[in-house]
Image (cartoon, rainbow, N blue to C red):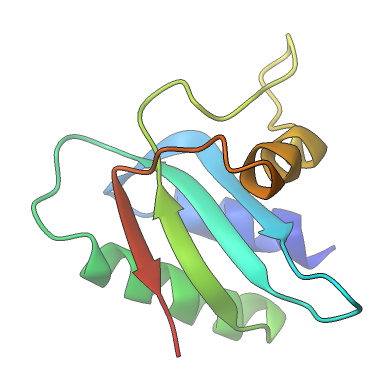
Length: 108
């Protein structure tokens, strides 16, 4: 599955908290719109280079283009008791407009 491949690759980036990246399909009406949700490591000043590196990894590893990267505050991504990201809950938070990103980088 491409989501786990992308998440694993993004986890290796130095500006991303380990285990804190989730790829969800936020498209509707049969259209795919991949959104990467992640928690940054530290306090980056510029989020675009991190997002561009993540988008490049998504294309290289899985051949898919990201539509957007959302940078979230620490602890926002829902996880199971064992620490795995719950993608279905991530998508629900996104769909319901319940996320307040620290930064948002959209790709054309």
